[in-house]
Figure 1: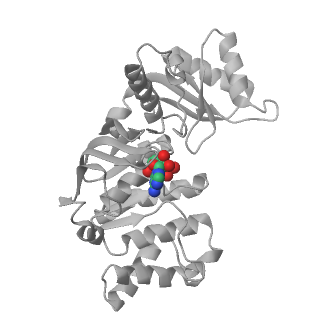
Figure 2: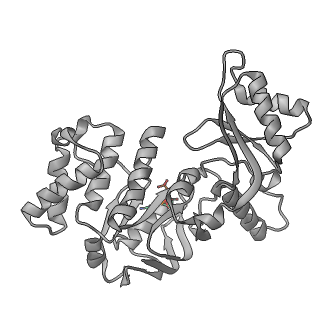
Figure 3: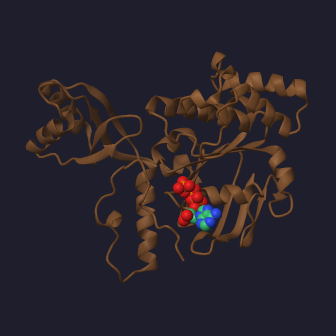
Length: 345
Ligand SMILES: Nc1ncnc2c1ncn2[C@@H]1O[C@H](COP(=O)(O)OP(=O)(O)OP(=O)(O)O)[C@@H](O)[C@H]1O
């Protein structure tokens, strides 16, 4: 679907992409990287909207430097930032975008109604978009990317600004774009956790270079780590801390797993066996906490990202001190915001 070869983009003060070589096949692919990693720049080059400084790229077998128009006919694009005219209704806007994509008037109206229904906008689609919530605006942006029935869509940070429920709804919609309509998806995010539930394949970029590209399954192989999540109670306003203390009192070492996607705080217990699982269960009961989740685990993509990023930096500067991410066991932090280099040149 997408192939780049030594693709670079240099702005006067910044190298946004640095000899990026990658291949993306059909399905749902996540493009992960911190702010400034080069995700939006890559999308603009792939759409033929911005020229590369060096290297080449193809989308659907078409060269981006010479076939931008043909690519945009077959590819949908959901931009990152708010770009909807406030005085226009979703219906008017999406019909307009469908017409711009070459659909005749009747087909444009029919496809608009179908697509807005598909993304979950009903009566409100006749109201001006200025009064919409962030979630509704994201849905309209998604609808306009899908209305001309593309082969592939680029979704730039579609969950930005959404609350956990809105984010889950959007991720479910993204999964269905491929499952129901066979449209392939390239979706960017700085949130690693959400992509491991949504994507078949994940590409991680850092400072404009490829850090890793592999199937989600390969990223998240089985481990002996046990993730435990509990509720707070009146007696234990911080249930996680109470459980941690009780485990430590019995000589079980646990690390804090950070805030998990769409969930609360979690504890991570390394090399947990049957006995440890029984102990956790008993302690949760003794403390009167609610057990939200006890999951023997998969690795989180975040772990792999931190380990790989640390390794790469160590390679670049073998004599230097270890970067913070390498100095301790990497937490399963959800976001890579701010953990990667910015690609300054
Ligand atoms: N038109 C431009 N002129 C100069 N620098 C730019 C331009 N567009 C992007 N950059 C810089 O290129 C780098 C990559 O930006 P890009 O927007 O592609 O990153 P990103 O991964 O999409 O991050 P974000 O999620 O914050 O948008 C950043 O340092 C950014 O400041």
